[in-house]
Image 1 (cartoon, one colour):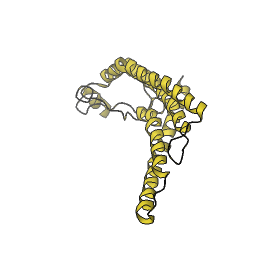
Image 2 (cartoon, rainbow, N blue to C red; image 1 turned 45 degrees about the horizontal axis):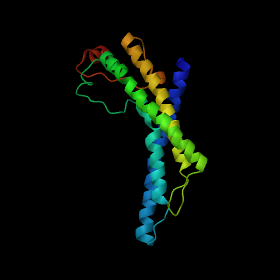
Image 3 (cartoon, rainbow, N blue to C red; image 1 turned 90 degrees about the horizontal axis):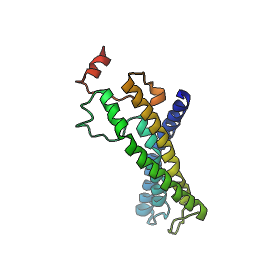
Image 4 (cartoon, rainbow, N blue to C red; image 1 turned 180 degrees about the vertical axis):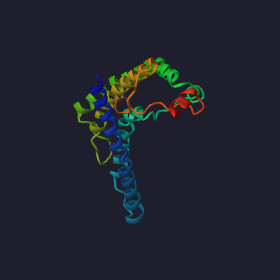
Length: 188
C-alpha cells in the first residue's frame, strides 16, 4: 500500500512541477500577442485562445500537487491554532466534503470530456482550436486529486494514531503552530 501511495504522490509531484512551467508558456503567448498587435499591427488569432486553453489545464492539473504541498486555503483562525493531531481530525471530518466535490468533478468532467471527444469539439473562433484535449484533462486531474485525497486521509489517520508519516509517501507534513506543544516537541 505504501508503494502505491508513494507512486501516486510521485506522479502528482512530477505533474505539478511540469505544469508550473505552463505559466512561462502562457506568458510567452501573451507577450507574442502584444508584440504582434502593437509592433506588427496585426494580432495573432490563436495566441490568446491557446493561452486560455493552457491555463485551463494548468488550473485543474495542479490540484494533486497542491494537496501534497498543503497549498490549499485553510481558515487559519481555527485550523492554525490547533495541534497537528487536532488538525488531522478536522481534515478527517471535512474529508467527505472533499470527496463529494471531487467525485462530482470526476463524474461531470468525464461526461464533458466524453461528449467533447465524441464530437471532436472545437472552439467557435476563426482558429477553431480543438477543445477536447483540454476537456480530457478535467477527469484525469480529478482522478489524480481524488487518489491524492485518499492518501491525505490515510496520512491524517496515521497522525491521529501517532504513527509516522513519511514525506515521500504522504507529502508535506502539516506545520505546527510555533507556540503549540507540537512545535516545541519537534524542536527537541
